[in-house]
Length: 82
Image 1: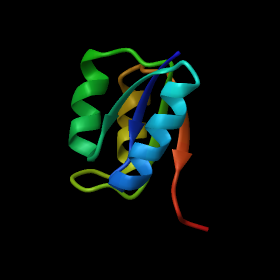
Image 2: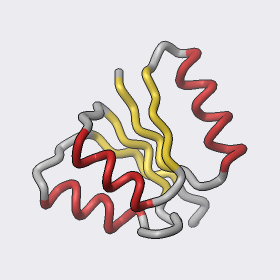
Image 3: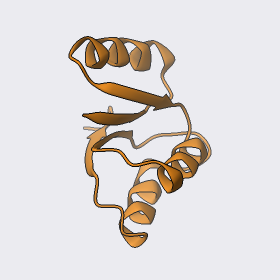
Image 4: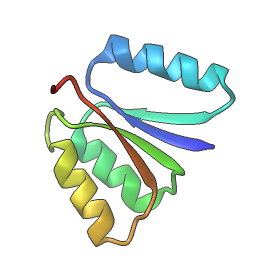
């Protein structure tokens, strides 16, 4: 499965990437909303793990753009919000 991890907390991103890769997934990781948006326009992912609180562009606007552009990849929201 090809995954995109969008997380700005570097230690958390590294830990998640390590777990996902060791489980056999191909993982790309970006750390801000603009980089995620750019990558989603040119690459296909089976799952996007998306933080809501990102620099440059928030996760919900990325998700809205994905759906508006016809990208139907599964999305898992990752956030510390309660």
